Image 1: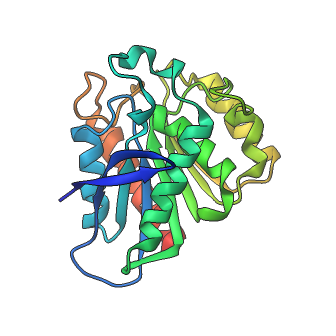
Image 2: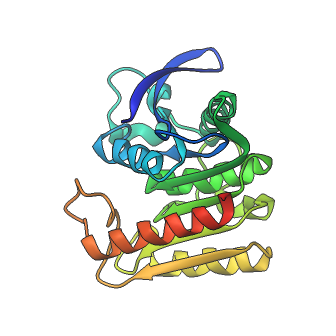
Length: 232
């Protein structure tokens, strides 16, 4: 079961959710970069289920960067891609430091805000990842901080990418997904996209009114297959 652990990111003491498989040595590791809801029940489920499938998993608390009293609606005024990258690198370091984890076999996955952060991390620290999965990450053509947007850094990605998108989503829109697909193709990056009719944003989040069981299960099964192919 996912446990809350202490995690030091730079000079900041924060938390993360983490879980290790019940058994096995030299297991792959996965960093989960969370959605708008943060370290909630959905994120906890992701970490737990990955551990149940034989992966060590950790979800760092990106919201340590929010001043006290700031609402999630205003989070983008305080989160930067530079800070998120440091969070992801620290989480990857934590996995690599666990005796049962093979630090050379790490993946990065995320939903919603975390889908965007997945592309940020894959591009910013490409040497850390064997693959990555992005569920409906929006605002990829916008900047957060003092570095170029994720779309402008895609050429730095050095691993396969899987993407899962709802065709009724407005952020990213179907046109945004087409543009992302074309950019990855132009950079020669191995990728596979799965797109679902009658599904919008957050279709995998079982706590959301947008939850859709069929695409949720299908995307998760496809992601587990993708992770297995590139980590095992």
